[in-house]
Image 1 (cartoon, rainbow, N blue to C red):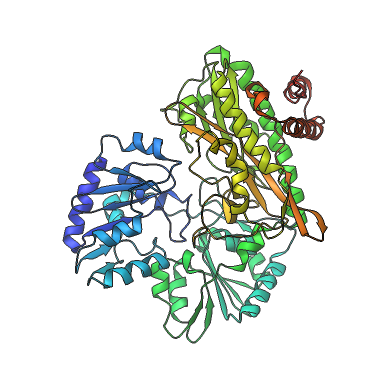
Image 2 (cartoon, helix red, strand yellow; image 1 turned 135 degrees about the vertical axis):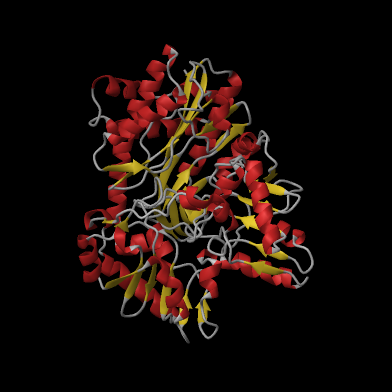
Length: 601
């Protein structure tokens, strides 16, 4: 079926059910914000937009796709020729999806969505607003699923495995007790874990249910004397079953959670409503008290222990070896005229696969030449890609998941013949990147306090990038993890203000994105560390985790201060020192040249 045919099929079902407006979010039943299993990609199936963020809304005379600035250019192309209108989030005159749903549901009307994939906070807000005009919610039917039919991908059920203590630094038993201590502080009888990463971290379990993200589709409930783990039993082999039993964990069917929640009465239930879907929320009896706070596991996994940090540093060393070999390959082979985006990214995949302890990519590689780089989440395929020519920029955003840790790095490669304007853009991005990486700040600061450091050089010339500057990174988990981050604007329930704490990992990735022209991004991972403590308080700083050279051929020194040139030279000296014993021959010679000191002379 074509997109327009799917929209019309949905409208027919809406008329049959008496539904006036139908909402299709991007989430799964755990309300994952970005990456989900193919089974849950209803928004993409319906609209043809393949980006990981956004939602669709359909009425009898309108169909819209909401997404943010990272995807505007991509969405323009993918929605072209369809009846679906691109609604640019956060742009003047564009209502947010919740307001649109409320205003477009008529008096005494019906707003529909699949209650398994819409959060309880959103549904409560919608229900309260609609009640004022006699309208109601219809949450029982997955209408897009009905259209998809037997062609819908199956729910993933891949085997899980135990991540050894030599990588995690703590046993599951210790982690469970840490969780219970927090529950006692809150006087909670039960903690419900709905985020995919939380049961994985607490139990030292990893899976393969989402591409590029080593998680399993599972829930958990923690009580004072037991832990219930909700997962398809086919995913548990004998070794994992024994391991869980040894840690006091009882395995239950994935779909049992709703009934078990319904059986609770008179309990203090700790659950973050922002990550609890509407169907599960509706199963909780009224005589329970809900403690609506983020799970303690979110902060536990955000602050890495010494073992996790040591392993992550090792993962970045291996990753840097692959990246240096890739950069050399691109530089030395682009003039052949035979390099495409797809060929280049496949070569990088193979280089990472050669590294010890490699599991999978941490996300699909973005290998984008020139104007394709303006699409922040562009993905080249064998069928749709550009040839890479020996001029301009090749933006490569990639990463790997190793048993040691998770990596995320972007390098924008200068191919040849850069204009003064292109060098200016690259240098200003680098200038902001350096300002953040070398920041010193008082304990208690959040990413909202620091974001301007990375944006200021671009704001000075009237340019911005419509995304955050940095995100947390999980340990052998999701490459995009909260609760912390580095972003501009005002805190919100979805993006709260979370202080940066020593042991957190965050990315530093400012950029320039000129639609249909070019994209430039430079990204390193940083560890929050302690600096000096004095009468003004405890100062914090960052340690660079990424050991890959910047692009010397793209730097215009006239935009940099002497201090910034020293920062680049110090970073490159560190990179060479870290990698010189891991590379040899032509690779080592290339690295030496790529990290040569800059000088104004």
